[in-house]
Length: 194
Image 1 (cartoon, rainbow, N blue to C red):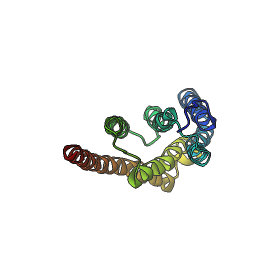
Image 2 (cartoon, helix red, strand yellow):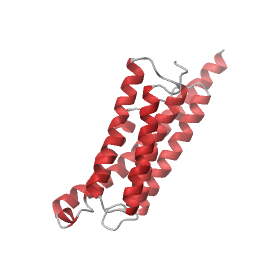
Image 3 (cartoon, helix red, strand yellow):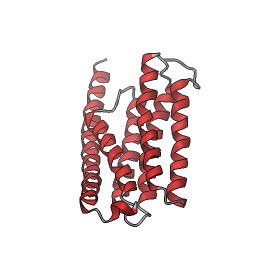
Image 4 (cartoon, helix red, strand yellow):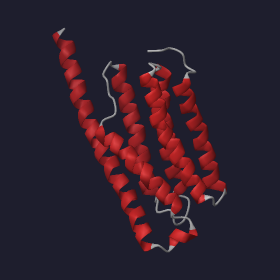
């Protein structure tokens, strides 16, 4: 693993972090909902770019392994926090609470397991969760535009995406917990045999 912290993938991740704060400023002080939605899509989509560059050019660092998922969580959780304050966004406080608790819990769980030397990489349900969130959040932002506020079909799609996000968030949290328990037991058995 490269120990050079300020390589291209990590600079992209830091740029995404800065972009997230620009996004939150727009959500809290303007009504530029379409601009906010585009900014969110750019910030979340560039996650694939930094990961690709890091793997292709062997620029994976410990710092990058911590920073990249942290930025994802800041963008997603921050967006839900700011959206819940906006009437008509379709995001209620309990939706935000479920998402933030799950992210904090899984991050802590991953940190604990990796301290034990257990690989706890993201699995399909976690990736699916991020994909659904990546659709739900900009749709919630767009639903604040006056042209969409009276569109019943659009609002229904938004609500389905929001509740779908909650369901996959809870499901992936349970799945990750069961996997963590199984991995921890397996590691303990290996340690006892040595």
